[in-house]
Length: 180
Image 1 (tube, one colour):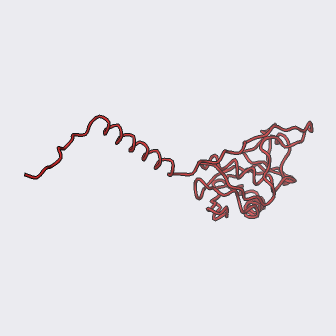
Image 2 (cartoon, one colour; image 1 turned 180 degrees about the vertical axis):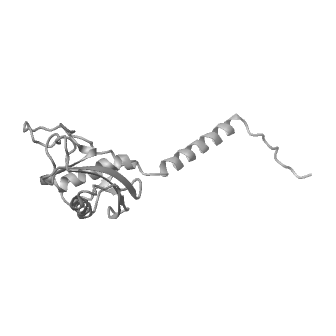
Image 3 (cartoon, one colour; image 1 turned 135 degrees about the horizontal axis):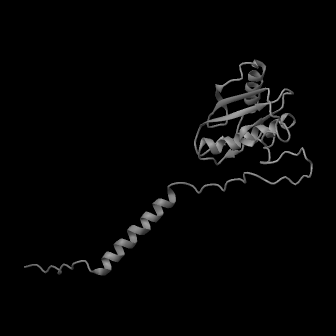
């Protein structure tokens, strides 16, 4: 009869070693799943100007900025898009509280692709009495491309309300200072 070494049953040490190796493997796999999320940019910065007409709220994006957006939802992206539009249209933003009677109010849905390009505009509520405002809002949105790149969503459809006065100045509902 050949000499065969006696078989050992796995002891408690083997179970702990196996559990440790599996935990280490799980930790490595979970660490490799996705890159760390970038720290979100501050949404608003208090106005340091004592000027009564100074724009309050988020600091507008630099002209032509197509910075990435860390927004995870269309509602969060709306803030980035509004800030971007304000940055490119500083001279057209109505400063302070809007008058009680506005010339036009429109609700526009905008599709943005993964590179920040505007792919579609859809009026949910167009100011039909003011076709020149409809055309000007569409021109303003298209001219603002590229928009912040929706890195976490790939592409996004967001909706905002345009509040327009008779002088051609506007505020977006996202960043409005309210009405008198």
